[in-house]
Amino acid sequence: MRNFAWVMKKHLNCILSWFDEPVSNAAVEGMNGKAKAIMRRAYGIRTFEMLRLVLLHNLGKLPESNFSTHKFL
Image 1 (cartoon, rainbow, N blue to C red):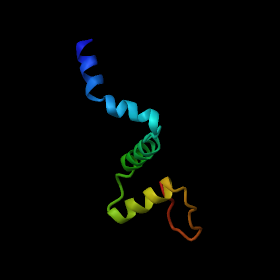
Image 2: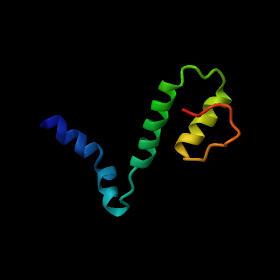
Image 3: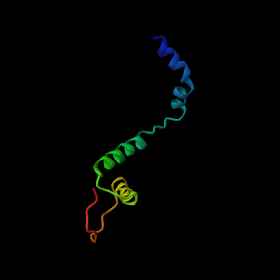
Image 4: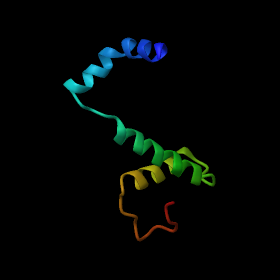
């Protein structure tokens, strides 16, 4: 209980700032989780540029070209 009180006292300014401006980083953390899942599935991708394209297509929900010879993950 004493440790909890110490942590609360140490972070009191950050805790109280939530009531002034209720902003969360949940959306960023959600996209980070999706990106990590895509990277775990993408072991066959050899170049960073291809990984970048796969991430952009999946996270940005961009349409795939009909002329492509492959499907994105």
